[in-house]
Image (cartoon, rainbow, N blue to C red; front, side):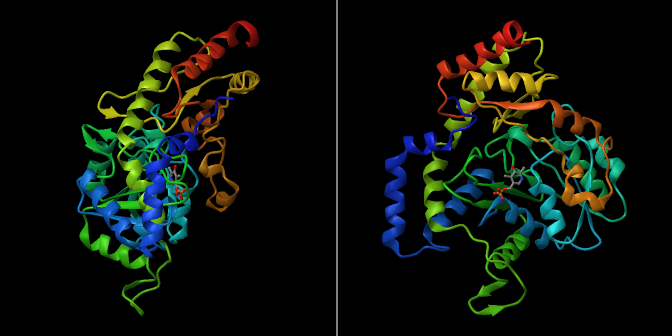
Length: 368
Ligand SMILES: *Cc1c(COP(=O)(O)O)cnc(C)c1O
């Protein structure tokens, strides 16, 4: 079987280093907000070129705490994409604000032109997602934000290490949120997340929010959360941080091979790669009108595929009260019917990838 992704394969290969670090945590006796979390936060901040990185319990909390730190809440609107993992919009709703969707373009990311159309006097922030590891159009988004005095929060949960015009995602807006969920391209064996920002006031506020609204033990100046990254995950992530660039590079190499080998396959539309971005291919998604037939055909060869995302956020049952309907965001909706991901992960061999490629090429003859 060729899986769509393989976090286990990745961790197993660095098992000894990970076990060594876990033992270090075990014998330190410090399990929450200890030296590994400190070191990880410093390393991530330095890498991204921001003043602060604040780890939290997961990527969703990273978004929630950031929105709350900017005092975005009831009566406020946040413009985001309808084509993302649900948590992007969920976080906006969680703080009491309203997600306002703007359609994506052919890059699968939010279309800056559509953002302008959705702006109202209640708009407080723009929340672009670097979907599948490809940076959104941050220059355009930042200039819209500047003109209208809006906050920009990057949802970089799928894009650690991706670059936009040579600059790391996570350093492009007012703040950025990452997830360490196991299948993400920089991940741990559990849940985790981090916020990157150079806004030191916001960083302090998030540090307080993640620990029950407290900066001094047993004194609470606001209602917060219990949302921290465990030492054991920080330790694992410190090991993975040394490998993430080579893993991303391998992802890019595999993507380049798919792009080359599949370019003339008539029933597939390959993902666009923009010149001024460095895509990290958290997922390699292709489009087809015969998605169902192809994915079932590949399944017979033991090749796993995945559908990201089968239902746009504006059409989710949980959001029926927002009053959106089919047809509101035609590009996102078309992608939800046509897009699917092919296996791509750092430990994938070229031989495995060749199996996927030849199976796809044979679909036309046998299955199509
Ligand atoms: C994974 C993900 C999240 C949420 O991260 P969790 O760590 O699972 O809470 C948010 N946004 C996007 C785009 C994601 O892919």
